[in-house]
Length: 440
Image (cartoon, rainbow, N blue to C red; front, side):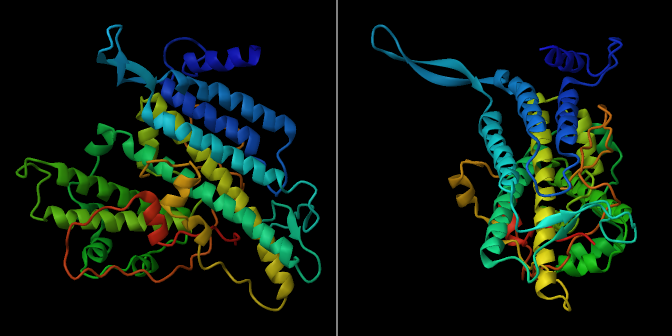
């Protein structure tokens, strides 16, 4: 009880324990609380093993405290009531806000699926870990080394590992979809808009703008021409793409074409450019799943006042991060198995993410994303400041790139036409999002 009092006092004070009223908003305080709770429970998860019971109890208890706020976020909806004389009349009744009513149970289910997945590795003997290697010249020296029996895993064990990976893939995809949807619904602060260039060409630069506006668009070819050898370069590209999308959306929604936002570029072409930029962002998320949040995401979270959105965003984000971590550890085992079977060969990278490419219909069958049309794992240091909304990640080294092979993807429309937009999940399927491979 004392622990709960302390946490809610911190939330009410906006993390300003002096009580001077200089704290952050309630929405940001709740977001930080969920982020920091996840970091304290999952931040040292460096192998496939059940979460200790003490930490598991802490997570379930405290996340339930924080999520309980959503039970009291309601909206008025019409309902029919039968009067004493038998007549029907319409009245307004309270019910939990629709997005929370759909997504909180879905996220709880995804949360439970991940913890159950880790519990499945209890007392397993098909692989094991050796102590940390202090030699920093070795890849992933800060994590235990995976070992498998001579000759590799048995067929049964290999199929079981693949099944666990498939389950995590579905969790990752669903959490990504919810997180992307919530972020898209958050209002863009005026300070961000005021700092934008007046057109997408200025934001992207001549070379990238020419590639995106060309008649034949090849996103893989575009990425191959850009230096992405450092995290900073990738983040710069991500921020430029998001800024351009905002510019094009504003121009499409701008009624006064004589304003400073006006342009001779047609609305249909802008919509096409926006979709192409979103394709690039999706590929970046696929190739670099541990990227920090973009400037737009951070400023949205910092300025967001909607508590429901804040809780959904932070909860889906930490589930996405945990799913990515578990999948990386599963990939480590599968790669060790592949190396054991082919000691003189190279490890074959996964070429698809079929298991994460479950259709929206199958996701609805799991009751995870009913009626919704919905990265990054954010990172923070081990000691997370409550004022930092960015998030957390398990690994403690510098940003590593993942396997970047992908199917050829060319969009060659004979004419530039407006087309129905795909949902986030459909884009994941169409553009071949795949699971992260072993880090190198």
